[in-house]
Amino acid sequence: MTTMTTRVFPEWRDKSLDDSLLECRDLVESAEFETVARWREGGGLVAGHFQVYFPEEIVEAAGMLAFKMRGAPLEPDQADSHFGSYLCSILKTSLELSLSGTAELDVFFSHPICDAARNLAAIWGRNFDYPSQIVYLPQNPNSSGSVEYLRHEYDRVRRVVEEVSGREITDDDLRRSIEVFNENRRLLRELYDIKSETPWLITAEDAYALVALAGMMPRREHNELLATLLPQIRERTAKKEDRIRLVFEGGFCEQPPFDLIRMLGRTSYVVDDDFLIGLRWITSDVPTEGDPLTNLAEAYIEQSSYSPVQHDLRKPKEKMLLERIRESGAEAAVLAAAKMCEPGLEEQVAYTHALDEAGISYFVSEFEENMSSFDQLEMQLETFVENLLFA
Image (cartoon, rainbow, N blue to C red):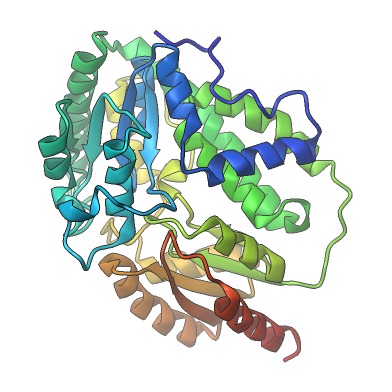
């Protein structure tokens, strides 16, 4: 079994801050997901889970690697024949990672977040001999029985992971795992505090890379990375520039190309976003006293962010976006959606109406994870930003 002594990402260590961040960017930009291969080479097992949220604490409590299947900027040569034409790219490229052997898994978990994704576990099950499971997060989190229901669903996940890992997951194992993830959540909140309070200290692509790494390496190792680099980032002496402060909305599932994020950072300060929101879904510490599965279930319902694929009447998406903009001190928003993403495109309509009523400027766009040309989009965004700066 792989242990903490097996480092899946040692390249950043003993280097300057700039060189460490370069290593982080290179690893996240790579479509090879080297950390997964290194984990397996050390004897470790891997649980792949599709967007948006998954209780990774259960997987790590068994000593397995929780790997977020977030697609990749590659052509789905083998996976394309398993899907219809008019579907989002992330479904195809996530399957491609496994069909090509790039990301070898021991179990796969999916979620019925949309009509396209609801069949993903079945497609996986027809192509691989390891378990492929659907995790049914509550469609109505406002129900009085949602926590109890979710607790039972998490217990089912625990039993599946125990069978795959060959290891019993005790409550104490879960509590220790929750403590590790609580520390990770604290560090990610600190990263976003830097983005919001002093965005000139970290580029948009560096911040994204630091978050994305959480989904492809053990959390203890990720905690070491953040605990080392965040204080160094705060000590930077970069000067504030005259840029528009933007919120990016639309990165909850399929991820925009890394170059698109880099382009956004050249024209503005991205002070908040929903990139990989599942990794930051729980917004405060999960209690470690009492029943750990109940605590995780309550945290999902009561201590969580928002996305177009959760329908919580207490968290209207338009209201939550306005709060994100105001709390981060943003002056405008980029409303993006992945091509063929029904949840994302539907929410754009509600978002634009809410921002119009609030008098907040916004830029609407679409993206695809493997798009490679940004010249026209960058010109349009620069025009948008300049109009705000010189209005």
